[in-house]
Amino acid sequence: METVDVSPQYKATSLSALSPTASHIACLSGARLQIRSLATFELDRDIPLPPSHDLRRSQIAWSPPSTSPTGAPTPPQRLSALPPRSHRFLVADDDTTRVYDLRDEKWNAVINNGSGGMGKNINVEFGRDENEVLVWSDFASRVIVWSLKTGRTVEIRDPKFSGKESRGWGYRHCDEEQDVCGRGSVLALLCRSSGVDTLMLLAPGTYAVIKRVELVTQDAQGIRWSRDGRWLAVWDAASVGYGLSIYTADGHLYRTISREPSNELNEWGIEGLGIKMVQWIPGNEWLAVGGWDRRVRMLSTKTFAPVVYLDHTTQISIPSASVYVEQVDARGFRSFEFAQQPATPPKAPAEKNDTGLMKQGIGIMALNKDGTICATRDDSTPTTVWIWDLCSLQPRTIIILHSPIKALQWHPSYPSHLLIQSTHDSPTLYLYTANPSSSSTSPTTNSATGPPSILSLSDSFTKPAGSAPAKWTAGWLNTAADKKPTMVVGHQQGYIFVWPEGKDQVLRFEGQEGDESDDSLYDILTGRTPVPPLRDSVKRRSRGSKDSGEDVDDIRVETVQGLDSMGNFEDTFREKRGARSRGSRGRSRLDESGLDEMF
Image (tube, rainbow, N blue to C red; front, side, top):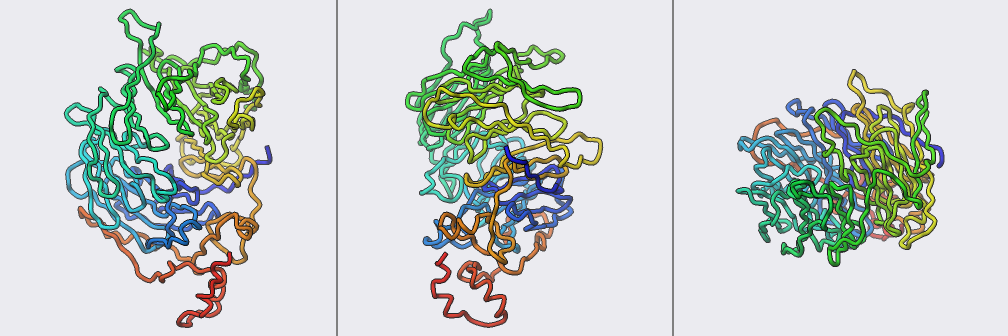
């Protein structure tokens, strides 16, 4: 691995959010909402929040990616040349939601909870696209869909969950060619009324009820669309047994799946707990179901019958897999050693009045981009990572860390890069790089892979002020496959960017200050990368929200006219010429010469 590059530390509070396309990061710094470009690492927006905003109970969300550079519809000839971007972002507290737009600093929308008496705003998300906002009220009373175009609302009663982490709701996935903007089409929402679980299928845009389905579950715990939008998986609570239902896209029950007969019956003839997590595997061929019995079942999407079992044993004796154990010496130096088999991973420590039953089952499961490698953690052995090759259907590498594992994240573009985060008191991360043969589509006999690299970032961080311990977070940026991987690491008072394999060498246009694209001049001139749109030559700073702080049960959208018919985007020649001929009226004949189409 090359030398690790680290950016300077930026101030923030414990709240920050990356845009889905990794073009910007939003964070709260004191009483200000700051938007920083991840191409130039400069502040694009610095928005002061009103004193009435509750900073301790705030949340930030980004809109789904959109290809529209302005508020107006994009001309068809320009649509394919523009990369998707998340243009809108929101900050919300218990009573008020404020929405802003990167393309227009004077545009903002304010959604006030009013005096409806339905509780506080427990969760706020963007809807199908950047023009919809979903607001969940407390006590699972309702979810309101706000339209930022018309100001109208649609109220849906009795959602079962608060909507956090997309639990209990999701938009049906669509083909990218048919739906280039937004998340998907039909909204599936899990509701519960009069003790009955109900699946609501709502039409896009109008949110009219397409179908209302009474589920066969006793206590449904979640729903999840398949990646091709053909199936909808609904799983029951673990306490009622192993129950998984597969529905078609139009709401018809296709199959109910139960566990195969087991010999692990107790004296009352009960098998134990059921499903703990469900994930669709990329490629639309398998459905992975992790259970409390420490087994991952791979179901075929043709018959929804189990085709393979991934068992996590208490003793590791797998000749085809390499086992690495982390060693920590008295000085705190960390390293990995190859372990001889059979090896026994350490079990989760038992607490007072703890039976040990709750500390078992598949608690974390992560799949790489092409669905060829799966990383899992069994809660009964929380320091152990199992990395499975789904081509050969056997473990490739087993990693035993010194501390319990907190998160497993595959890179969005690199199918061989796995980020492992544990519960360290110091910012120490582990980067596992799979053998290139493991990401192929055919089985391989040579599965030898080395131990993960250890990234110690203690020297790059300033410890948070106060006596509270640091709460470390880490995650990949959604960078393109031709760019070197980048991750963001932070605590409750700051964050940094880390390039584990070094930075990209980038050439830029002369005078192209503040451009959001990191593409090289070579890629642009050869046609591999579309020409990035240029900003106005004079960079404006935000003057903050125009919210007056009044309590109204309505939405206010403020727009400022003044964008020209071309969407306020000029090519390179117009940008330079405009700086020399400021104050002149009208347009030159060169504007229609077609020079803007050369690149």
